[in-house]
Image 1 (cartoon, rainbow, N blue to C red):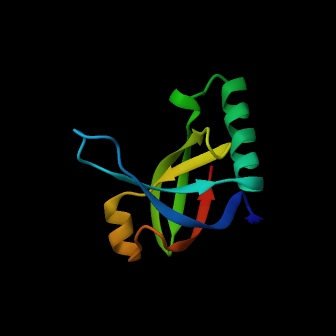
Image 2 (cartoon, rainbow, N blue to C red):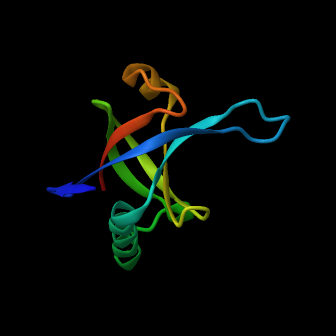
Length: 109
C-alpha cells in the first residue's frame, strides 16, 4: 500500500459475483484489505461522528483503476473484514480488465 496526500494505492484481483437465479446480472469488485481498509474504516468512523454516515457503512470514494478514474463507494465486506469496491462495466472496458486480472487501484476518500 502507498498513501500519499490521502490517496491510497494497492494491487488487488478483480473478481466477479453472480447471484442465484432468477437474477441475471453479475457484479465485479476488488477487495480492499489491510492498511487501506483500516484507513477507510477510520474515515467511516469520522463520518459517523460528524453525522455524515451513509447506508450500509459505505464510504464515498474517488477511484482510479489502470488509469481510468471514477466516483463510487466502498462497502463493508464481512468475508474479508475489509471493503469491496464495485467496478462497473464501463470502467472495466475502458481499463481493458476482466475478472481474474490483478489491477492497480488508487482510492481517495
